[in-house]
Structures are given as C-alpha cells and as structure tokens.
Image (cartoon, rainbow, N blue to C red; front, top):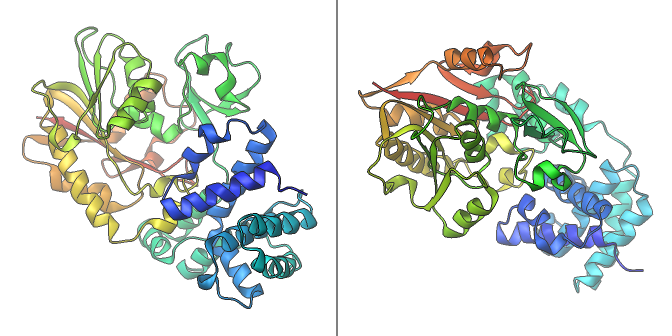
Length: 445
C-alpha cells in the first residue's frame, strides 16, 4: 500500500524545514503542493504545523519509547517518528494502525528500511501511553520550567516571557502558540463581503472592519481581485496607526521593509491619492511584492532600508523591520527551534540602523511607525530608545488608538488600555486573540 499523498508531502516539507531552514508556511503554499486535493492539503498542513508546534514534546515521547537516542537518529527516521507520534497523540480521528503503518512506509521509501522495525516498535509504545490534556498542563504550569516542558517551547524563551509579562500571560502566550491561529481579513470595500461567497465571516476581535474567516478565502472573488488580503488583526492595527496623510493628493508614504505587502496594500487603499513607495532588500521579494500588491498607487523599489536611496521626505513612514518573530510562533513554529538568545543582539543592530535611516526620510510634522512582530524588549523599546535624537519624539499610542476608535476602526468593547504599554502599542497572543506586535509612533518635532 502506497503512502498517502498528504503524509508524503508533510514528510518532505518537514525534512526541508530541518535541512534548509525553509519556512513551512511558504512550502505549504508552493506550486509543488498545488495538485493536492483540498482535503489532502488540509491534512498536510495539520501534520506539518502540528509537528513543528509540538516538536519538543514529540521528541520527549519518542525518546522515552526508544532504545536509540534521538540525537543519533537519521533525519528521515526522526521525521517519520514525529509524524506518527503527532497523529497518535493529537489526531483522534486518525486510526493508530494507519499512523504507524504509513510512518513505517515513509522510512522504507526514504531508503531507511533497516529502521522500519524501530519506527514500528516506538510508535506502538507511544500509541499505548494514553491520552493527555496538553492544554490543561499549560494552564496549570507552576513556573517557567514546567511551562516550557508542557508547551513545547525553549526554556530560555519562556523564562524571558515570565520575567517580562508574568507567569499568567506567559501561559497565555504559549497556549496561543500551540493552537491553529485564526484567519483574518480587513474589509474596506462594501462589496467585499458580497463577493466572498462560500466562506463564513465573523466580527474581528480588535477592529471593526476586520473579519475572522472560516473557509477558502483564497478562492473568493474579492481575494482574487486583490480587494482583500489575509492579514492578522495585529498587523492590520499597525498599518492603521500609520494613518492618513493630511493632503488628499500628492502625499508621500514610505514602507521600508514591505514584502509581502499586506500593510503596504492597506495603507495604499486608505490613502488613494498618495504615492506609496515600498522598498524591499532582496530583488526576488521585491518581485513578489509587485505581484501581490495590486494597488495602483504603490511603487516598488529594491533597496536596503539601512541606506534608503531617496532625497524626498515622506509624510508617513512605516518601518516594520525584520525581527525574531516571537509574536508569530503560532503561524511560524519553526522559529522557536532556530532562534538563539544571542541572535537578538544582531537583529537589534540591524533594526537600529533601519530606524535611523527611516527617520532621516521623515518630513517635518510627519509620523513614523516603527513595528515588529516580536515580544522581546531588545527589538522594541530598546531600539526606539537607541535610535531617537533630539529632533524626534515618541507619540503616546493611547491617543492614536482613541483617534482610531473615534474613526470607527476599533471594535466596540475593546479596552484601549490593554493595547498600550507605556507609550507603545503591544498586542499579546493569548490576550488579544491575534499575533504579538509592537509599535511606536514617532514624530519629527
């Protein structure tokens, strides 16, 4: 019996994520998977993301059931074991015999036939270990050590969150990371909802014009015509903070690190009379940005944000900088297995350089939004503090959010104070129902 298409695809993606530092989300939407049925693609996504979210726990269960150490296993064998263990522990609708049999067949197909008996024996032990309520263990974790173990997160990262946000919020962050995140869009065209037949739309959690989507949004007319884009509500809120330019025409907006372009598109639609210049360092990502961002007032430039090639000053600037991504681990779980604490220093140096460069292009009276999808202070407050000079000032985000509420952008019932830390915007996974974003609004004096 051949291995199912979904499990074979999941196996190959997990190997590429491990060997090539690829991102699972990009591989799951690559042309190579276009031939999969909707059902098989759904199972592939469940398997890949589930294994990556729970990798440490899966390895612990596999290690306890194996006579061979995890570290000595070939990557193909370990990938098959993780896939099998995930199905046995988390997917009750998958028969145990199917999960075990196909994992054995995967190692055979990968020319690791000698490991087939090991895979079979280990997964039978894992499958017989009994059910566990993993989320209950996360909620009851008494300290950082217990939380990291229960939530399959690196201990160094959990310790930071407990120290910075407190144990209760750290539990919430970890629990959010381990669940499938919601799909959200922003509605700014009255016809969009009419042109989204076949999907269910629910109100957003933070924004009045956001919608939580259930179903195949990519197949809808509104999506195909570029009138809506999949975008986390935290990301939407960052783009909204950039605001509208004061003039109806001839305004200039700069997006410094724009790909893939969801924030760029939203700013462009809200400022149809302005010229939006979107820069991206790598030419291939600049081409992707051109393809995805269809607004007619967007102009894409391949450029290094640390040395912006413009003499013009801009009314609005968005510096949504490359970062660790620790606020997006629910969508990009492989990050937590690659990131090292020392990486934050290298990222910070680059972020400071980008912010200083972007501030240099801000017009008098203009506004700049510095943002990350990181939960780490080194990439957020510390960068702003290091980059500011006397001619700039941080604008209190609370006031900006109140203006957005007055404009009908913030959903009813949302407590503005919960979104603010000091002068800054901060969305927290597990608290706000979206990814973790930080934003600072900066003005030129």
